[in-house]
Every structure is written in structure tokens, then in C-alpha cells.
Image (cartoon, rainbow, N blue to C red):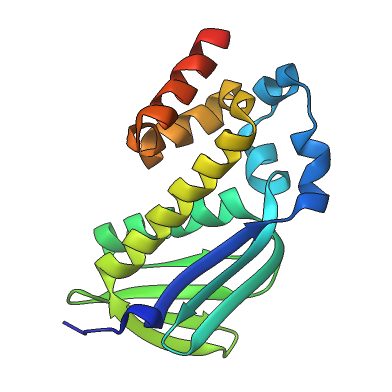
Length: 177
């Protein structure tokens, strides 16, 4: 197994206040009606960076929920079939993932780097990214939990189990439906 220094793998992100302002100002009833594709492709834009052993992927004003779900899905596919990829919505570029023993090889196309990392390290970082994104979104606007897709993501990402505050946020949103 490859031993990595703690700073050799990092995922950082931030929400873009300007592009999300229109969505975050939505009335409560509006959230419940949004479809999955709207949430994945048009909601919650932000900046994202994945740094791994000198290789880096950066995206600006990118749909963060779509990116989190794409990475999570690709890693699930790797666990089952040994390889997969992450495409970037409406953009050129791809991260190709392939399993070699317990390590994951990542190739960033076109020609932006190669890295190898223990599978569990990247999987853990992707899960933390997804969970923290959903926690922050629902902290600021708990009414987004009235959307069936966001509520589903909240449950399966483990946010609800992070603590009493998160559990009660979910419970309150479910009573308001």
C-alpha cells in the first residue's frame, strides 16, 4: 500500500454566492418542485479543486452536487468493475479511474496529470465532500429538504446521523412536507 503525506490529497470547494443567490432566494414551495436534473445541473454552483500528488483538477462555477454524485458513482463503479471515469458536465476533460490492488490510478485528461492513491483515501474524501456540501446547504436553507431528491441525498450521505442538530433539521423538514 502507498503511504501518502496528509497534504497529498485534498478536496476543497466553495459555493458561488452570486450564481446561487437566485436559487437560494426561492420560495419554500419552489424547492419541492425542482426535478433531479435541475438540482444536479443548475443548482448550487461553486468552485472545486481536487489536488492529488501534484496533479490538480479545478472547476469554477460548476454544479457541485452533480460533481459529488459523479465522483461517488464512479468510485462505486470502480469498486465493482475495476475502472470508471468522471466526465465534466458540458466541458471537455475526464478523470479516468482504475483499480490496481488496493490503489486507485487517476489519469486527468487531457494531459493534466497522473496520480496513484489508496482507493479508500479518495473514497473517504469524496464522501466527506458530499456530506459537508449537503450539511452546509441545509444549514442555511433547511427548506431545501422538502425536495425529495435533496432529502434522499441527505439521508444516504449520512448527514442526518452527524449529530442531533442535523437529525432535528431533517425531522422538522419532514413534518413541514
